[in-house]
Length: 205
Image (spheres, one colour):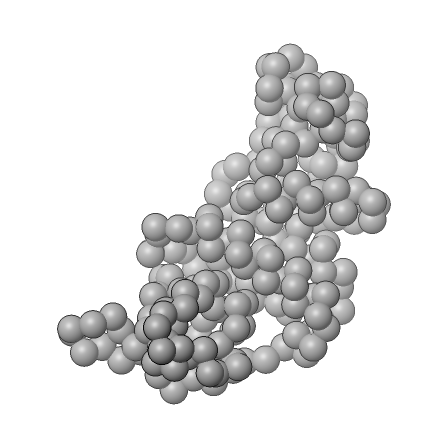
């Protein structure tokens, strides 16, 4: 079985509880002395087996790290792990999931080798919003419900507002944001805009 580690909870005696995102489920597994294993890191893709004894939490066994070359790049790794943290919070309290989320991580992790990491993560997030039916309407301001203009500001979850409805100095062309969210592509966005979108994403999925 394969999955991505999306959360690690330390326990006593260097034991840990891991939340692992697999194609159909977020598994919560126990690992004795897991803190001693360097491969058990946030965001890591692993191959593993589950041992059930019917008494305690299922145990994580026979772990193999499925490494990516970009994990040696600290910046790429940190950006990836930050998104994984946001994803864990998004799924808090949820166990059964659709295959989309595992596939999203598979696609993103493959792209990170060569592409700009911020753009990769933002395009992953756009695909998540699209899959969950959360692409906003760009007709009205999210806050005041009046028609939007050519330039807009964005709030959490990339909800569009007038530039004077929120305390932000950053604005975007509405057509570029529409393309980004509907096509899951950052091709028309400048690097400065990518930075601003990343800061908005950090507010939460």
